[in-house]
Image (tube, rainbow, N blue to C red; front, side, top):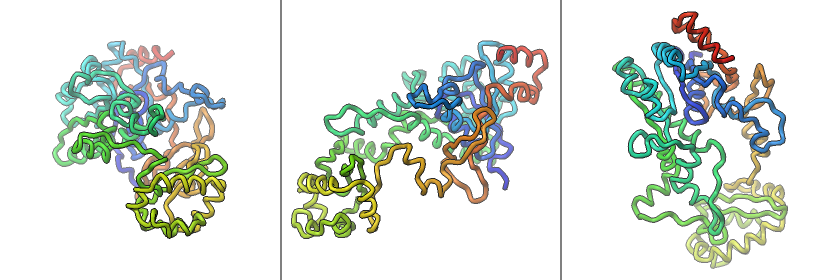
Amino acid sequence: MTAPLEGIRVVEIASFVAAPACGALLADLGAEVIKIEVPWGEVYRHSLPRFAGFDSDFAGAPHFHMDNRGKRSLALDLALPQAVEVLARVIDGADVVLTNMLPDRQAKYGLDPGTLLEKHPHLVVARLSGYGPEGEEANAPAFDYSSYWARTGLMDQLHEPGAPPAFQRPGMGDHSASLSLAVGILAALRTRDRDGKGQVIDVSLQHIGFYIEGNDAAVTLVTGQSPPRHDRREARNPLWNHYECGDGRWLFLVMIESDRYWQAFTEAIGRPELAADERFASAVPRFRNAKALIERLDEVFATKSLDEWAEALNGHRLIWAPVRTVAEAVEDPQAEANQSFPTVDHPEWGEFRTVAPPLKMSGYDMPGTAPAPALGADTHAILSEAGVDDETIALILAALS
C-alpha cells in the first residue's frame, strides 16, 4: 500500500502540542517529518507522568510520543548563525514548513512566509498561533488554555450555575487545531499539484475554539446573548441530563428526541406510571415540569448501582452512557475492537500502549506505532543529506553534548 504522502518532506519548527500533533498525523500518512528541536529538548519531551501527579515511574513522556511519533529529530540552537544557515539548507528540500513560531520570531530567522515563498514559491507554509496572524495580539504567546478555552467562552459555559469555571484538560484545543492544520496542508498540496504554487495556511487556537463551540457561537452572533448554562436540576429535557446512581457513580441520558424514547425509557427504569402522568406526556409538558420529573428520576436512579442500571437500560434501544473515568475508558472493549490503543515497542521506554491516529483508511494502514525520535538522533544524517559540510556538522553536533 502506497503511503498517501510518500515523497512529501515536512520541516516542523514547533514545540508542545498543536503543530507537532499535526506533524505526527502527516507522518502517519507517510510524509517524512523532520522535527527541529532545541539541543536540550523541549519541555514537553521531559514531562514525565509523575510531574503531572501520576503515581508512576514510567521513564518517558507518553503524550510527547503521541504527538511526535514517526518523525526524525534534528537538534539545532538557532542562536548560532550556522544553525540558521543549515536550517535554510534543510528547508531547500522541503514541501511544507510547519511552525508555531510567532511572527516576529519567524521574521528574525528568515522563516516568515514572505521570505520563504520568495525563495521557494512551491512551499506550503503552515502556521499555528494563539490569536491569528493579524491584529494587536498576533505576537502574543498563548496556550490552548488561554486562547481556545478561556477567551472563547468555553471555560465560562461548561460549568453548572453556581460552580466555578471548568478547568480544561491538556491538549483539547491543540488536538482540534492540529486536525484543521492538517486539512489545510493537504488542500494546499493538492492545489500545488495543479499549479505548482505554494501558499500560507493559518490556524489559530482562538478561532478553533469558536469553531468547536460553533453551535452556540452561531446563535450568539444572531441573538447577542450567551446561551444559558446547563442546570441539571432544571434541564429543559430531563432525558438529556446526567443522574447519580446509588453507588455514587453517574450516568448520562442523551435522548435528544425525547418523545421517541419516552415510553421505552419508563419501561426500562421500571416506572411505567410516569408515561401515564399528564405532566410528562410529551416534550413540552416535560419541559414545563422538568424540575418535578428530575427530582423523581433522581430518586429512581438512586435505587440501583451504575452496573444495575446499565443492564436495565441496555435491554432497550436507548441512547445513554456511563460516566467513566479515563482509566476505565481506555479499557473499553469497543475501543479495543477498533484498535484505538495500539502497542508501541520503543527502543528506550519498552512496550506501552498509545492513542492511535484519529482516522483509518481502507487503502493504507497507519497504526501509529512508530516511536518518537530520540533527541537529535537524525541530526548528522539530515545535515549530510542537505549537503552541509563536515566542519559545520561537527559544530552543530558539539552543541548537543
